[in-house]
Image 1 (cartoon, rainbow, N blue to C red):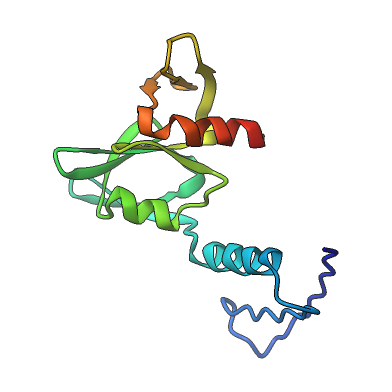
Image 2 (image 1 turned 180 degrees about the vertical axis):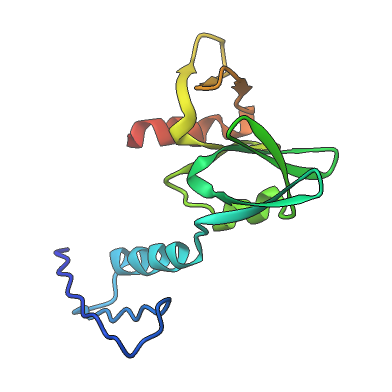
Length: 153
């Protein structure tokens, strides 16, 4: 499939409006994947609201190292600080860029930009070492998705 992209700047639209027009010879699996990716991209967030000490922070998503849940609350770590997030991990998983964030367990989603390395030494386990020195264990249920992620890179 060859993709040709044309774009037009229309000053009559509001600053947040984007209109996408797709023309194809036939419906195909590749076209459906493209449509799905565009849908996901349109739902991706560039910032989130975090709470700390009765203060509200606007956190750029690219600065967030990881999201985790503990005692039925969701937190994120950014700039070596921890913030409370009002969303659940499964909600975050839906709105975060799949190329930037990966779910490694029921309680952790990490930003791949902050991964230092993967430690495969433990039999049947994968440890992820982050740039800040933290080490996280990949749950056994998520090992296949992590290996798939590594093969795609």
